[in-house]
Image (cartoon, rainbow, N blue to C red; front, side):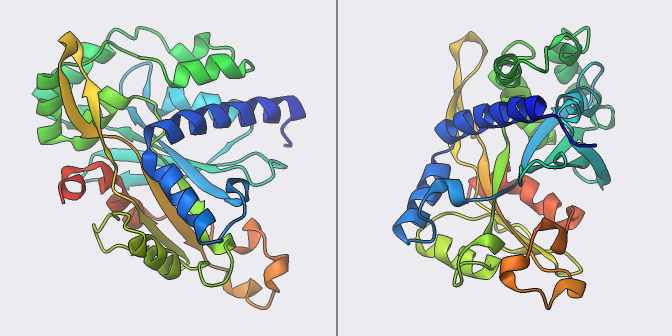
Length: 305
């Protein structure tokens, strides 16, 4: 079903609000775009196709994916494949953009299975999230872009203490990230396959980034490749930010990062000219093995390198 023009307009405003605050908070975004302009890979930032954006959530009553996804399902996104990350205790889905949306980003949203954590970690998380006694999205006017933008950037619970953050870090770095960052955009993704020759493969683009001095996630190798070879991904390491916690305490924590994706042309479309290629001709969806390592862009094994 095609999404109405008014809903698409609202969705675009919500996405712009997310990207605006994300750019302010993640200096690598501007740095990479400036480097691409300087190298004349692009003439304008508007030429960059955003492959997908990602969010992290807590699997607790009234929150988690069951709540969060209502926002984007309202705008016509379609829920697709499930993913399981056993070691990290995460569940995830990806969501396809609405029909007729002119290359809006896919969404990858994950949820921490809080009930799989230790009793101490669960106690800390519920100390904050139990204050949310009803699904906040149900009270949100999803046709009001400014209200949705504000919601995605507002506190869902009280500011955590540094001690609670550190305790969660020791067991689940994902849990610690969400308890502080909430629904802040975790990353956006540059589609490298649409760039000009010389930069249009992940190998070429990674070489460009490394030559420019950007720090890339090395977990599982700098370039993460799906078993079928059709999805190739890389990401920067999250930049550290000075975060203010409860009681005015400050502590340096991982913020967000930038991802890069190459979706290769499907074998049945190999003979199509480059000018005739669209999303429908390339490898779709995601790959759990790739995503598992990209999650670690905010983990101390990468930020501490």
